[in-house]
Length: 310
Image (cartoon, rainbow, N blue to C red; front, side, top):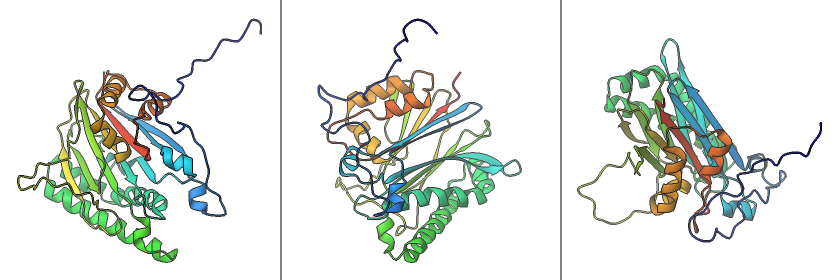
């Protein structure tokens, strides 16, 4: 070979809102000791995933928060991108994020366990779930969701007892989006325990919580408590749709949903990154999803679904 090597393009540090970036370094730092907590020690700082089925494309990322990196604490978030069902029952994408409760000592285990249990249990009832979505039967979907959440809660509590901990030590939220692979079914199923975000980017405009229903009896008070598995045994459910070509659904933990709702710079950046009609590659998506906003240093997990792009 002859001639000088060409410089390799680099994305560099993630973009940030405002004139100055947050003070924490935007890179992995301290690690947990394997002797101290093996479950935490083997958790990666960053997870990137994705999938593509016909007109559906998925990108996903989970990143340890700045404060957890600085303190050498594990990422408490988890995510899941998988397929449930089969040729006989019909197939669905299962997209999930889980946010381990910060004060719960084993929540990094709980968040990963609930994602795994959700995939296993919902696979068994995939045909019934698809039938409920096809007929837009919310009561049937809700019954299936509550059965799943109850099953997951029991399994997580059993794990806690086997490992000698109280169940609340594994406390975690869980948010799931079920997407039929049959293009004729345009309804998507949502189930959740606890907080987080489910936003829609449509025609360049953000709809920041498409799963939130207005409560005419609301007092205006904000309840800062959040439901969490394994103590919670019921799910919030919604049927979303019909999905339109070009829709971008964003399922996330509050590490992304909270700054997204509060920071215009973040909304503008992610609209430009995800709402232009093209899907970013996994590495670009990871970089984009780490857009930084001061005072928001929690773990961040996000699964994005692009619908029917040309």
